[in-house]
Image (cartoon, chains in turn red, purple):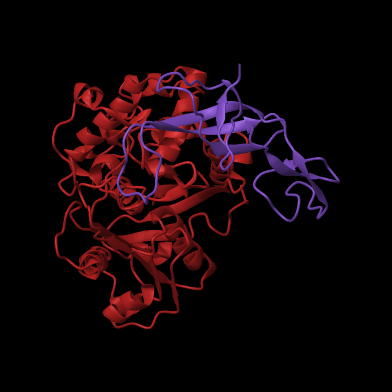
Length: 377
Length: 110
């Protein structure tokens, strides 16, 4: 396929770094970023003077890092600095891959850190969508999708609970994870609804931490200490027309991103060995499995009930605990975990023979859709 | 009944929400403000059973629902359905614009 020949296998991750996720009282976010990015430099055996692109993440509330400040911290004058208007992990690393694939940059540092008030205690997604009617919180937006999904397909709250429990099981295998106390389905069902049909456990909690990735050419990555992980394909769609789009809250825009992604890679969902979903809510995991074609429409519940998304299952999802239990770093940790998996360095949560990894996300008022396919070199 | 007025494109007939200076279907600049029937269907909804943090005040007092209403004329809007208790609202319910001098809300259609 030639649709993304300018992108496929033209960039690779050579180095990764991540702090413990959870609470870091009194620690400046630039300190957290410094810990992650210096780890990534060492991990990839990259000299700071090789870095000619610096991309950082900022959030809708302008929290995050300034890429020029990071450049000054590093004592470098890169060719490119940047932060996107929605600079979560997937969007930022794809932008880095584009810079490397075009030859505008050779080696791009991607880094994000935050230390919000309410780390470990406050629900995420605190944004007002419509004050007149009291619609706020991104989790509530996801819940709008689950209500409709459940009405159309008979979705069960036990399915959401199993998603939450699986993420906690994975987090217990991840020494850097934020939430590692045991969680059972009974625990989940015993919690009261907060924004029905969701409970608090359906929406990820704010955490503090940092993550960094270094993206470079495959040639440069091959001289590094680890197996390179190559960018293979991108799937994108913006549901800009929101409510007026067809089945906006059922995230049908994922189907468009999926079609682009698999066509560009000449792969099918069955070819994916490990999946990372930006799980600001439990429900999006079900919607992703169906809309991307990992299972049929309405079959997400059965897929999950059979243990399908567990490490050792048919399609392990969020093997580090995801955002629900691993740490809420807006997709940045998902890229790091996929790299670990495709390198074969995920230890006791390693997916056997993981060669193709996929990341997917949806953001904000269900407007942003992105998927990345990665392949082990 | 609260009067719902939206723009109907003079060229292609598309009724748009929210307000815009051009038709998002055909890009025409010509539209006529039209009073709609007030009829709609509940496409989806949530119930806030308590305040979540963080949020900005003021908010309705829980429990309250937020619903996506698909108006009979085509566009979808965000609103509240009043006159229903938690557990009484369902996807597909027929609703009608409620009496309110200030804010568009809906009640179950009889």
